[in-house]
Length: 377
Image 1: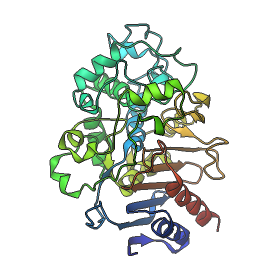
Image 2: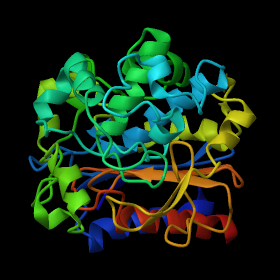
Image 3: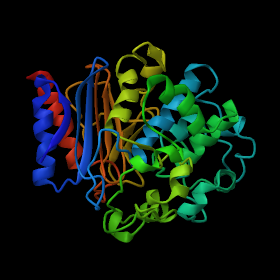
Image 4: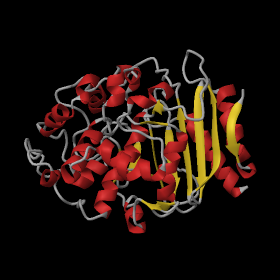
């Protein structure tokens, strides 16, 4: 297996773990990126960009599904940091009409912590429905909550992006994808896209989906709410092969990038909100991420999850190294992004062969563990 890129000698355990994924875990194509104090210390890629055998290149991009949520949440965090959004304000304050059907008590902080009671679409929609922004936002605005908002998290697998995206659009007049491009990606030179310009299509690798789509009975914990949520917008993993998906802005699931671009953005968070002279958040804005919003068994995922503001936080289930101020999220299939503010460390992993897991899996996990071993070694 030929592995391309650079790896600081201190972080050789990450290279070894990356190589082992190909040797032992059926990796097809992937990239891993690690930063320390804002500087890249690992930037590796290898394998094939899809089943056709074309090589994964330095600039290969793939759809990362819910790792996109870290980018969408960052946009909302930035607006709150600028005083444009209040966490305790009702969503309807920014989005008139959203209050219908008993949603007047849904607050912005509930959206950020998957506790808004809107984990799925009611009635169910198709992936194609997500391409019509006005239509899908009107659909969500008309729904009633499935549980009392703010009381418990229930993973908003696709709906969180609709909620966050419309809040951003109402506050700024820009779509979330445009805001992200102009305020985050372009200033940082981060090759991450929420709504992909066709000029980049040739660089997009092909995902290799798991056997069952999201929403199939085989992919859920079996709870009624979990099944209802995931079946409300069934996604197969083949949608990113279409130009319609790539052009659409789907802030919870449609981001297209690689490990380098994910890590470039998260490096700013790891360093107090600023990297290489580009400030996204104030130090106080970064600290907001770690304010616990919910902590308990997630109604959709069926496992204990501790949510801060827009990110998962370290917990007994997600230990994520020795430090306390660690936030993360991952995407369906396996992509993963971990940010450790105490160590000023980020670990990002993006791949094309998907497992059925909704939020990360072992291939990314061993890379994170290897990065921490490198730090302590």
